[in-house]
Amino acid sequence: MGSVKDLEIIKKASKDSFGKGIFSFTDDYSVFDYGKMPEKIPFKGESLCRMASYNFEKIEELGLASHFEEFIEPNKMKVKLVQVIYPDKQKLTENDSNYLIPLEVVFRNMLPEGSSLLSRFRKGESTSEQYGLEKIPEPNQFFDKPILEFFTKLEPIDRLLTESEALEISALNQNELTQINDFALKVNNFLNKKAESLNLVHADGKIELAFSPERKIILVDVFGTLDENRFLFNNIHVSKQVARDYYNTTSWKQELTDAMKQGKQKEEWPAPPELPVKLLELISEFYLSTAQEWTGENFASARPLEKVVLEYKELKEKNNW
Image 1 (tube, helix red, strand yellow):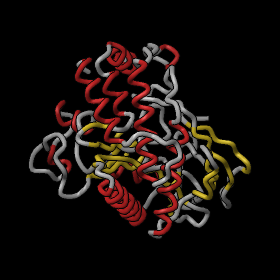
Image 2 (tube, rainbow, N blue to C red; image 1 turned 180 degrees about the vertical axis):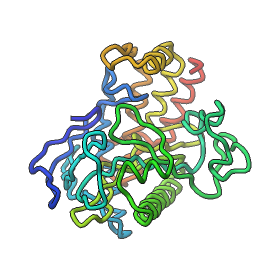
Image 3 (cartoon, one colour; image 1 turned 120 degrees about the vertical axis):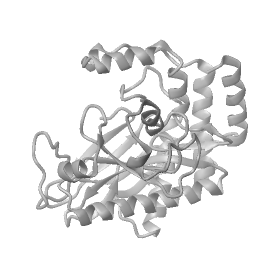
């Protein structure tokens, strides 16, 4: 069970062989590492599943291996499973295989408002020199080449890692880390080209990887959707960043941040308010319209994304979000 999708395990993975499972994509969503939010986004699960399945099929054509096996209408996906080994419970070694690499690999093509790296630059927590930049980039300024970062995957709150920490926590050697970087850049390039063909801008995203039983790198979980990536249309976010933007205007965001800093348990975190009804409707349309245009399948007779973005922009300006 996850915050936005469920997993049915048909066959457990072992150290020597893949397992089998089925992802069921729900209409739940999460922001700020809070977990499941109080309301659902209608049709979100189906939209994500269709978009992710399309992406898996396309990267296979590029020679990139993954755990994807089959799309099951309307919101399920058959996948191969690997072991999930928590580094704090069992130290990984280079002799292990068929396990989830405990990293989120983030690629950044630009820094839109809401980017965690942009926030770290502004707070002085990161410097341009650390990323090979002459100066802190302006918001929405494209980089000459993508920035890659590593975050923890199997900890309660995602933590930024140095390259040496990523090697250590995942039992990677330098050659395998290079392979992971190349893999991420190829996925990012595919998403950039696809987005550009639809007048979308792909700002950033992430992938999760695993080792196969032969210790070959494969792509797992899902990627290239409005949950894993940030896409913009005419400088307007069409991902769940829209929900983040709204909650950033509420007192709940600061209350949640304070609770996390104080080390409170999740059950002690403040409960979020519900999204305004009209905003929730438009976010649902973002998912549907983008998925239709991305896959080329008119599965929901959704409005063109351009019209949905225009209505959202008017609503945002009216309410000063």
